[in-house]
Length: 163
View 1 (cartoon, rainbow, N blue to C red):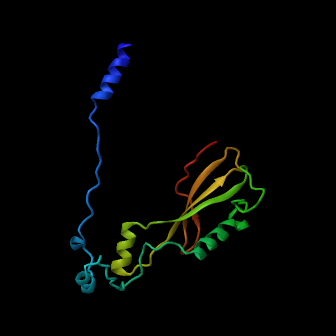
View 2: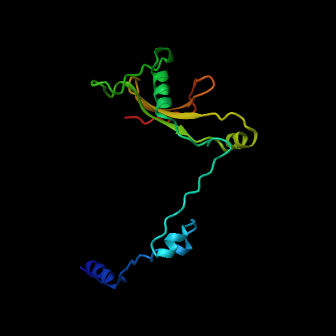
View 3: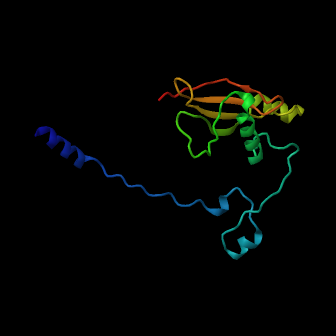
């Protein structure tokens, strides 16, 4: 009983917490340029878009849908020996091998600097996750895929998640 009393007294003794949001930052302190007309009218100023052009395309651009589709088709080709089942198949089971996920990997800093400073062609890589349920011990494997120049699969890490 004394433990219960101690808990009740402890909860009653806790200071109450009051959270009050900070006021919105004044628009005059914003770091974007605003139009003089909006400032003269006393309305909320809209930022002015400054359009610039880069001397080289961004090295961080995402894969287009066509690139993802081409990579998936390349992986599903029989000569890859991955024995992949179409993920859209209505009878897909956990015992099948199938593509789970494809995403672009951000480039290394050294590759980006060489691309920006010296114009060296930018290598592009994808992370491909394949559910390999057809194995004796099913795993989910990560593949590191180079999309150029030779488009060969390089397995650099296989993080296996067993059932």
